[in-house]
Image (cartoon, rainbow, N blue to C red; front, side):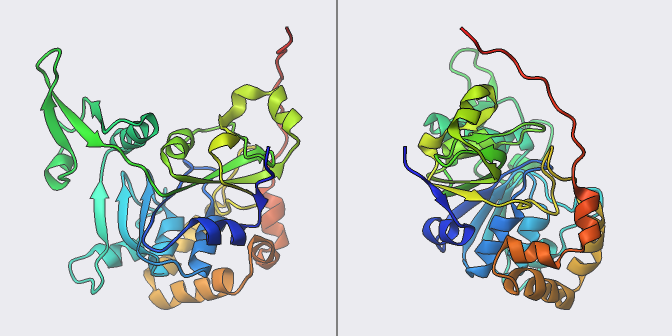
Length: 303
């Protein structure tokens, strides 16, 4: 198999183009801020950003002028407050207003499922008790051909690029995840191009010894990036914890456009990549976030 290992700079330059739709996946953990920062550094524009829970990474990309549209199912700074760059771009007074398309979590996941399955839409029992469908013309209702019941549908979503962060991968792109799952598998199979970003690169034999953890197979992956600490301030189960202090601090930073731009200049534009980003971090913070071992027992796959 081909060696797909590339730097983050190379992977983004080859894969993400202006005007495309991009998913940076991960749910609570495995959110690849390193990829978002590289997209900002390469000054990509007019992107449609797709994510079940856009949080700080998309707020930063919106603030940097990368986005023209946001497709999402919840938005906020988890446990803290709003995404203030997003709010500034979506309010009626915004000069360059950001288009938004909102779904429930299951509704947006269903769009990925339809895209991954090669289907034109996905049916679901949803949206009867809320107003989301009234503001989203993409959600349509049809009569079930078997029962006659009225059900909702959402259109298939085939994003141009999906970025999947994982604990470990091999150089062929076989990516393994443990802990909380997001929509990594669904968005990867739905996407036209896939970048796998791994905390650790391991031999293929390591992957084969524990095949059930492989959620993205190398056959659908375009590039593999080795990027330790690539999800900070998000976390990676078994590697480092969530930087809650950063999320709290972001509330103040994000309210002030000048502070926002100062952050981007220092921690995004002012570094060449994640290695230099880590050098700017306080050593005490890195030590505090490092995960304590809690090993899971293996299983016997013998035959």
